[in-house]
Each structure stands twice: as C-alpha cells, then as structure tokens.
Image (tube, rainbow, N blue to C red):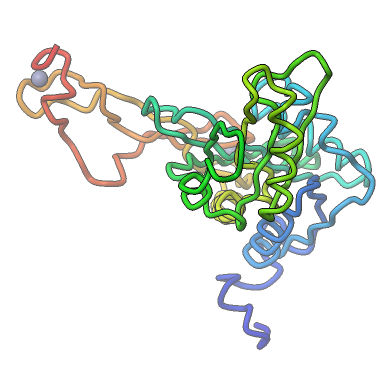
Length: 299
Ligand SMILES: [Zn+2]
Ligand SMILES: [Zn+2]
C-alpha cells in the first residue's frame, strides 16, 4: 500500500481491479474532467486522458442550436466513440445530461445524467444514471434586469450562469448570448435581445453546460463515483466488470389483499457481458405495498 493518503480511497490492493493500470479517454469539452477523472483514478486506478481536438458540440448542444439525435445513452456512446477515434484508446468514457419536466412529477424541473464506459477489449458498454431531483434549471421572461431579482436569487446567479435570447425571435435571424456571469453582461444581452423579440422581451434560462452550472457539475461527480462502484463489481458468472442493477420489477404484494401493486417488488441485477441476471429484494426491506398503490383496493 502506498502512503500518499490515497490508499484508503482505493479500498483494496493497488493495481488489482479490472481497470487498474489501464488508460481511457474522456470525451468532454465543458470542464467535466474535474468532476469525473478523480473517481476513475482513485476508485479504479484507471488513467484518464482528455483529447485536445474533438468538438463534442457537433453531436448536439444544450442550447438547442444543434438538435441531439437518439437517446441520451446513444449520444453518450457516440461521444465516447469520438474520443476513442481521436486517441486510438480502447476504453472511452462520456457523460450526457437531459433537463426538462421531472420524469415522475409534472411541473417540477428534473434532470437525468447518464455516464458510459465503453471497453472494446472486453466488448462491453457499462452505464450508470441518476435522476437529479433538485437541479438549478429555470427560465424567466424579462425586458430588463429589474424584472429578474427573485429569479436571479433563486438560481444563485452568478455562480450559475444564464443564456439570453429573444423570447419570440423576429425575422432577423438567431441571436443568443451564452455563459453570462455578470450583471453587466446580462444587462447588455437583455438590451440587444428584447428589441429583437416580437413581444419586446427576452428569454433568460440557466446555462446547463456543466462548467456553467455547479449544481449539475456536483451531480456529475456523484454519478462518476456510482459508475466506478459498478465497474469495480464483477459478474458472479463471468467476472466481467460492471455488474449492477439493470432494471426493476413491479408487483409488490398489497398489504391488505395481496394482489400485485404498482410498487417495485424486486431489483434486477445483471451483467454487461453475459446473460446472467438475478432478482434481489428491495434495498429498503419493504415486503408489502401500501393499499393506496393497489389496483384492487384503490382502483
Ligand atoms: Zn389490495
Ligand atoms: Zn457476466
């Protein structure tokens, strides 16, 4: 064991895990390496390199100038492939986020962050995701900065940057100001955007690029740790890395009548390389559902 203070974080013998001593490429443009690289180096002893010459924005952007194709998993895989092609490395990492209405709760903003590791030596793709219940993801419509006081406090401006554009753009073409982090820059963006909108107002949105949104960056750091935990877990059948939960099965029996409810009955764990999978009881130990979730008792 080394005495440099990192040995506790690596939990186990140095250079023994499935990725110890190997090299990977992280395809990113927005400073995400600060949130992602330490987890891979400390938990897996995987050396992560950042390519200098790839433009991941060609795959689609958060600000909507280029539409993203496919699912976020497909987008993350395509991004990782770009990095692998640029460096010739056989292991690639990328992350992708998507923000919109909360997936389970209407009218509440939510986000999904997904991270993949592609391993062409083993022929596997391992992914992990998280749902961000409290993202800093908001918008407001304003003619001048005086209209935005409560909004700017709420999004914790200027730690979180904003994007400004005409609310209802006129015919003079696209106009967008990104990465605004000072009151002066915001005022001047409003002054050029509002007059170019049919309603004379500007649309002000949180800039969701990771380096502009520290709340999102923290979520990405948590996700990197979770993906590394999964990668350190080997399949009980074939020993491939990346064993973990892949699905859930609903049907937890109702506490009153025993009928299958819509609540999760068990977690399904599976392998990224082989067909092996197993059901495990809920991690919270619950064995029966509240009758409120039962289609028989509460139709
Ligand atoms: Zn019931
Ligand atoms: Zn397996």
